[in-house]
Length: 119
Image 1 (cartoon, rainbow, N blue to C red):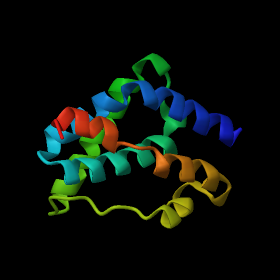
Image 2 (cartoon, helix red, strand yellow):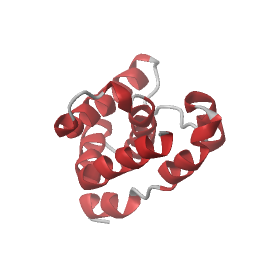
Image 3 (tube, rainbow, N blue to C red):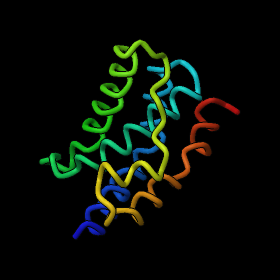
Image 4 (cartoon, one colour):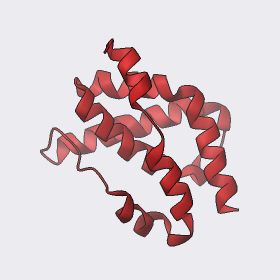
């Protein structure tokens, strides 16, 4: 069942990847901070996917998670949120999700980011 949830999350995320990247970049103002915020937001989305009641609202739900992740990094007095190492992620979602975490941590954001940033 966990694998189904993880696959569902990735299937929902892939079509809105570029939109999420643009939103994180707009908030953060630079690519490095945007990528760190986005990585943390993706992890938070995966962890809390069961709280999403209507899949048609996934994009806006993810935008809210990205915004909240950004706001929390500012409140903590940091411009950049602390990145979470992949080996530390399993403590958050359980060891049975390690394969899914590997897939999420390998999800490639830079290609679309480069398009958005014109790099």
